[in-house]
Every structure is written in C-alpha cells, then in structure tokens.
Amino acid sequence: MKRVIKIFAFSLIAVLAIYGCNKSDDSTDISVEGTYAGTLTVKSATGTLIGSSSATADISKAGEGLIQVHCFGTGIDTTFMLNYYENQDSVMVCFTGAAFQNAYGHMMGQGHMMGGMMGDIKPGQTQWQHHMADEHKPGDKHFGGFNMKEHTFGYTFHHYNGTNHTTMRFDGTKK
Image 1 (cartoon, one colour):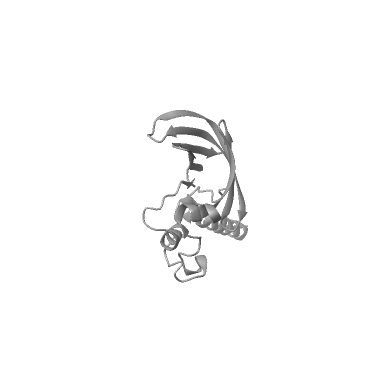
Image 2 (cartoon, rainbow, N blue to C red):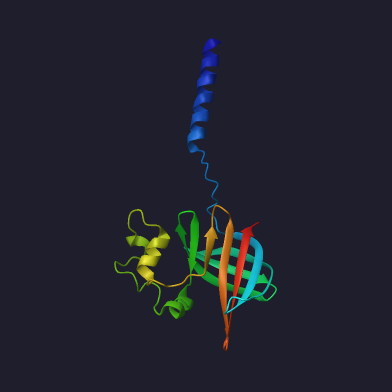
C-alpha cells in the first residue's frame, strides 16, 4: 500500500511540475483575428474634434503576414489589406501593394539589401524592426497596430477631399 501511495505521490508531483513549467503567466493572445468594437473619432486637420461614434473592425487573415480589415460604423464602411509584423507585445501594420508604393515612393521589397524578404532577419531583431530597417526611411509614418496584451486595435484613416483633410481614428477592443 505504501508503494502505491509513493507512486501516486511521485506521479502527482511530476504532473504538477510539468504543468507548472509549461504554464505561462503571459496572457497574450497571439491572434489578431476577430471583431474589435470601439469608437471612431473624427478630427479636422487642425486637430479640432468633429465628432465620434461607435464603430467595429472585423479582422481576418488573408495570407502569410497579411490581414483584411473591414471597418464600419457611422461615417465609415471600408475594407482594405495590411501587412502585419510581430513586435514584442504588439503587432504593427503597414500598407500593401499600390498603397505602400503611393505612401513611400517605392514598391515593397525594393528596400531589401540582402534579398529573401524576411529570410535575412538578424538575431534578436523583431519582424517589425526588420521591416523598418529594410523597407523604410526615418520619418516614414505608420497608422496603426495591435496591443496584444490589452487585446486592442487602433488605426488612423486620412481623408483628403480637395483642400479639406480629416483624420478618423478607430480604437477598439477585441470581443
């Protein structure tokens, strides 16, 4: 009987030790996919608040390192694609295709000195740091991203209508 108890106790300790070693205190959800409910805030070019309203962003993966964003609410209903890059406890986003070329003056991939897209990432470098080093010049702007610990997504839309420029900022929390 003592032998059975010892075997049971040893097994229980082993299971608890394995579970304890594999359990992480980091509650980061590594998936950006989902529905984010939040607020759309509209401001003029001078920063004057024009208004705010409820809005939703549905995020779905559309390929390797690529997401589709459908943002809708009062005053907005748009769907677009973004590249995404891990950056510690955040996931940063950047334009794709023609939008990237229009914003930064060159096609994606032309900034790579070594070739191979993400294949030349340096040790200790995040995907975002690599993207910034290989694809961008200092001062290039980016307009959103995900906070993986807080489960939030934010993105700033720029709207130009002749001489008028407004920004619409979506900030939402994953449902």
